[in-house]
Image (cartoon, rainbow, N blue to C red; front, side):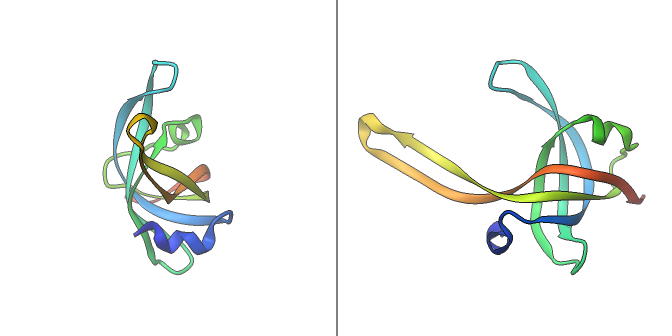
Length: 113
């Protein structure tokens, strides 16, 4: 579903999404880091769904917005490509693919409850 973002790589756009819940992940240094899950991410201008979900780090910008499950939030983010998959050079396994993500969310605000 994120292939629709391929044509917009590098652009900064406005999006709407529904807040689901907070989560946790282990960062690259081994420390716990809070995350945020958003679902039904749509481009604000056309209301076209770009992805079913997206995870972000729970930054200070998200902390400022009072989030409750089901809130619709609006934010701006940059569309970026990234490489995902599995590589094992010893057994000549290389199953890398390119996918697209939203990064650097800013101007976050509640739109509807």
